[in-house]
Length: 120
Image (cartoon, rainbow, N blue to C red):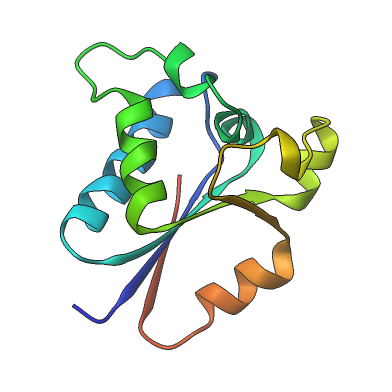
């Protein structure tokens, strides 16, 4: 597959099923060989911090740390600039491999040819 998948997840512990769905789709896509860019926005921004994914619980769902690790290993994980600033998160606070970028980068990713964008 040559198509890229950009997933923007806005939900965190406030909407656990939606959050888990986004991370699951991202991890399955990576495992399937799809180029994945996962954007952490809104309440999912907290998962850019070490240990925060381990605090997430949803019965009968894959562990969020495992899903996040798989995307970090083979895809791109980006924390929204504005979301980071609103939460007092700096680049040095984030997990290794998480970048902080804004709407211009998001827009350039989703407007490229052969890209599918999903928002959860």
